[in-house]
Length: 228
Length: 228
DNA sequence: ATTTGCTAACCTGTATGCAGCTATGAAGAG
DNA sequence: CTCTTCATAGCTGCATACAGGTTAGCAAAT
Image (cartoon, rainbow over all chains, first blue to last red; front, side):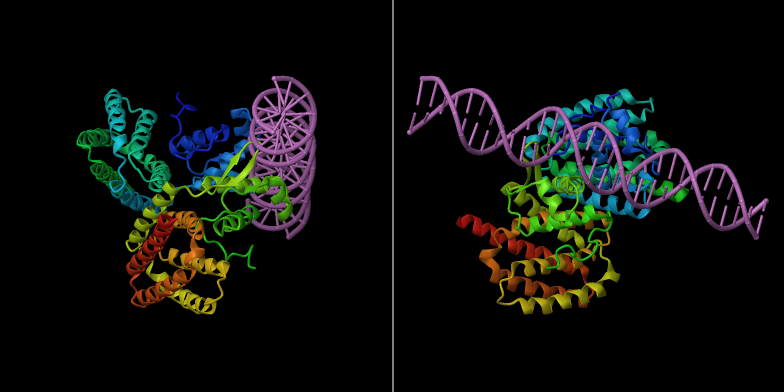
């Protein structure tokens, strides 16, 4: 399990050290829903797992709270925040705009690297067919995000794009099980389209492709929510 | 001076406690350039000032680092980050887009409150004429930001809008001294325009007004930088 | 049987001691 | 006089002890 080795720096301005490792690990677990909303995380418990004292764990938890992924209450503990439907709509609407904005700050020289990365992702996606391996699928999405994120030449937009990717992914995975096959096919065509766009050197197109597939996912989630 | 009482919660999802107070105080000092870039902040020193131990101070400093306002190096201390010209361009370009986006998520019911707030700001701005009181001017800008921020109905956009306002304001104030009169006049007309827009109930217009005045400020800073 | 009050266990918030790291300046060699 | 070296003071990173707060469960009274 590539747990503590979830690729290297995904932030551009990355703080170093073990606190960041703990932060990323916990963030991934939350976004993977291995820590479902409402779950209580004890500092002492986590400190034992990571073989450190409570201090670094607390720092990681405070970053998570600052990200809005957890909420700490005195005397109780740190719990994973729930998915507020309003925040859900807001985040998705905002992400659509961010993706549309991507083409206005294209990092042309990153295109070749992104292309080769995504070609590899395509192979791994094929290998994933029929396995229903949520974690591998998530990891794929994560790396796709990372690759496209590097195509953004604007630091501020890049940070924001990443920030809300994580907030959104957490929500998204709470309903993915019902649409796994569909999302798999969708991701396949998204990768295909992005490859085409990158071969044409059209980063703006990459943004619009991403926007569209975010919208598709949103539509599925919305219809699922309406059905319930 | 209304130091520790810099209005109430400006974040929508606000953490509580004294750590947040310390954080806001330090953030304001940095954005005011009372702590200029490169300045070294000692944990022990701040702990004495706020009459707490190093622990809460460290938490506040870590949030500031997460915001990109400071940088902590082991064995040295926490220093206020400098104004990287590249980051400067990125943040400004991004803020322009965010302001343009504002009208797409209008919080109609907040308009009356914003209007009355801004009318008060107009009076205070008049009283400021000829005083060259940087801190009061900054406070005015801060409250204007707060008022317009509440006009955004999308939580994600609102958070981002606020986040980069603080990053930008810090840069902005490093050159304001040379343009104080100009900026004063500019702010006056911005307030006038916003009042007109709010009276018409046109929040989209507020966003565009803000965008334009951000661009004006950017132009001044750019020309100043070219002159140097 | 239900409700109320209390206590004890557990959790986070804070303070503080210690280890590791960095920079500065004085002292000595060239 | 200049350059190198090393000791030292001061800082952050981490661990840990203690204080304050919350909740669950039991017991007692109605």
